[in-house]
View 1 (cartoon, rainbow, N blue to C red):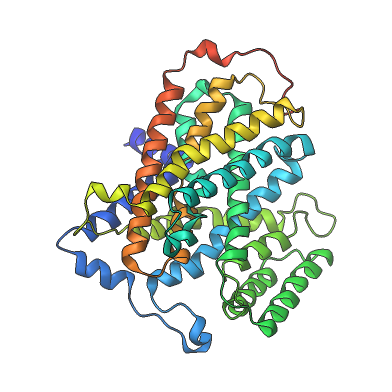
View 2 (view 1 turned 45 degrees about the horizontal axis):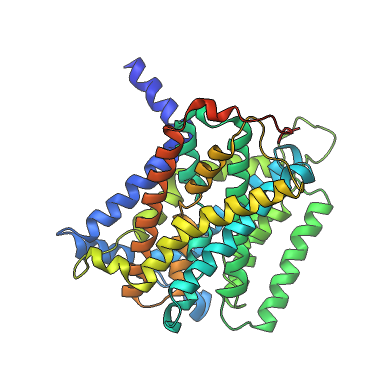
Amino acid sequence: MTTFSNHVRRFFASPAGGATILLLASVLGFAMANSPWKADYTVLITWPMKLSLLGNHGPCNSAEWVSDGLMTLFFVTVILEIKKEIISGHLSSPRQVALPLIGAVGGMMVPALTYLMVTHGHPDISGGWAIPVATDAAFTLPVIMALGQRVSTGARVWLMALAIFDDVLGIIVIALFYGTAPDLDALIAAFIIAAALVCMNRAGIGTVWPYAAGCAFLWITLLNSGLHPTLAGVMTGLGLPATSSGRDIRRSTPLDTTASILGPVVTWGILPLFGFMNAGISLAGMSTGMLLEPLPLGIMLGLLIGKPVGVFGTTMLAARLKIATLPSGTSIKTLFGLSLLCGIGFTISIFISGLAFSASNTVSLAKMGIFAGSAIAATIGWLWLRFLPMAGHSARPSAPYVP
């Protein structure tokens, strides 16, 4: 019994634990959508939950509350992770930021162009160009952790920083391209609330609840502003102080307190719930040949070709131009394998697919492309790194990536 409990504790403490639960929840959603309980699943994810006080722009059912409401907390945790890395982690100097940031930009542009090339001549689906631009850190991290010493510490840091920047770029894309017609009054109100969060930070307010209240008001305001309401999580994360108030430096900072509270909630609750409610693709009337249609094919090729080409190409270009240095103790072949893993797109990709398209059959086709492309990218990337000779990881010395 003690051994079993130790295994359970290690599972919940490991990076693979959350990804495993997310995967199982997604598989459960997919299974229910293709089972005799399909009608019950549909009732569950479309359960009416409209609040009149939020007006016509508020979430109408349980799935929308998860995507538009609870996912706000996911974006809070993403921003908090970035702030921690910038303040005292692996992104605390320009040299540490440059390489993964450049790779993330390349990993956004090339997949988007790949998608647009494949879907050229189909203007009704051109709006899905951003679906293959994001790398899902929740699934990528467990894969590289499972590879152990085959992936150096510097390479692991590079990939995780790149995945974080991918999330940031995805958030920016959502804000700029997937909102509705802007409402000037609501935008002004949102700006005032965001400014208030910054002022509270500057004033040294060290309790969490004022920022939580500000996030809630900001979320409501953004519902009517034309911007996606989950941006409230981004702004709140940016406003949370990273230092303790007063003279007691041992006191937990608002950033650390929020991260410790939201981290488990997001990992073990919100993301699995999101996966469960969004992975329910019914295969009725579908066939494998449909993966060759422009929409799923554009997403798949964006993830499988556009992602590694964009990430690896711009990373090597930055190194050649001496803008940044490659991770220490990491061969070029290993970097290419990690670039293949960048094709694992799930959470943000599914999120954007729901914003890009309104027709359920179109969203289902997009999700098919996301699942197929991500699964193939994970398999190819893992096989490449798993069977790459260990000697290949001791390439010629390079300047340390983590000074």
